[in-house]
Every structure is written in structure tokens, then in C-alpha cells.
Length: 261
Image (cartoon, rainbow, N blue to C red; front, top):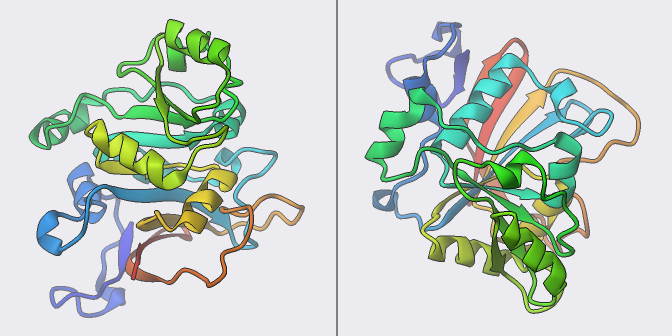
């Protein structure tokens, strides 16, 4: 891993950056959530996504084939820093989501930040068409949250709650309103938010103007085909502008961190 941006006085040239495996403390510092002293608001919602050179967010419906060991280390770091991981129901089904686990490497860091042993998983689902017998619902370290609309079927709500999930209403109709979802999570004490997609959910968050930061891994691969981009759905009227905060590289993968201007 080496840092390409920003260039600091200690390492005035990108060529001077040492290419080595970074420790947990370095990755945690590189991806730390912004603090109130930086003049940012809470809650803070960041996304973590991976894309090939030709814009594919998946291969054969999953992100793992276009990932890398460095990408997975950053994936684990971002989870270790978050209060809650927000994910769409389709991604839960396709990727076989499991509960977030407690990691000893992050125990002291999370305790110092006033966090629990692991982030909660918050699943966004209008229909609640999910398999509630999965470990994500039956044996999470932290109860799984379900973000849904007020018009969700009462029998599905009852089934979810019986399975141990906590249902959070974040919309007046069937769907979930992104801004209300963010506020509802903040009201539960979750201010460091992380979403891992999928593309449809990320597109909704972008369109609603609630995405503060994008952590994007650019994979040095080409897939062709018709795979989704990292964000889908209707386009925004005016493109959202983000600024580059940092850029890391390992084995040809680029790891950019972008914040909303």
C-alpha cells in the first residue's frame, strides 16, 4: 500500500512513498470519520464500493470477483469504524450477508469511541421479503435493523420482529425515504453510517442528496457485459460534485476517498 495523494511535506514526491502493507492503525487513521472540530455535521454517511475500469460494480452478480486482499482490508477497516452498515435487501440476498463480527483488533478503538463490539446491520426493504431464518437475523452480535415504510405488510413486520430484528419505519408509504432513514438511525445513536450498496440503494442515496462520502476501489479489471454501475436508478438533475480527499494504491488497485463539496 502506498499513498499517492495528498502529498505531504514529509514525503514531497509520490515516488518517495514506501510500498508496504499498512497496519490497522494506519488504515484506521486514513479512513477516520471526520470530527465535529472539522466543521462537519452528524450523522455522516459514507459508501464503500468497488468498480472495474469499465464501470462494472459486480461480476456474475457479486462484487468478490473484482475485489482484492487490500480491498478486503479496507472493507474490514470501514466496518470496524462504523456504528451501522446500511445495505439493500437485494444485496443481502445476492451476497449472502452475515452479521458483522467483533474483531479483537478493533476492540480498543471501538471502546474509546463509545461504540459496541461490532456495527449493526441495517437492511433497507420495502416488502420485507427476506429469509428470517438466516444468521443475519437469528444470531447477530448486535440486533439487525430493518428499515421499511409505514405501509409494510403487518404479517412480515411481525415475522421480522419474532426473528429478533428491530423494525424501523423510515417512510410513509411502502418505500424507504433516504433522509428519514439517516435521521432514524441517528436517533438510535448511529451517527457513523456506512453503506455497502447495492447499486440501487446507492443511487437512491445519491439522488436524495444524503451521501457525504464515497470510498471507491477501482479494480484494474475489464469485464464488458451489462453489469450494473456502482449507482443505479434515475439520474440526478445536476451531477453531484465530490472532492478527492485521499488516494491509495496497492497491486494496481486505486482506493479513492471522496467527500461532498
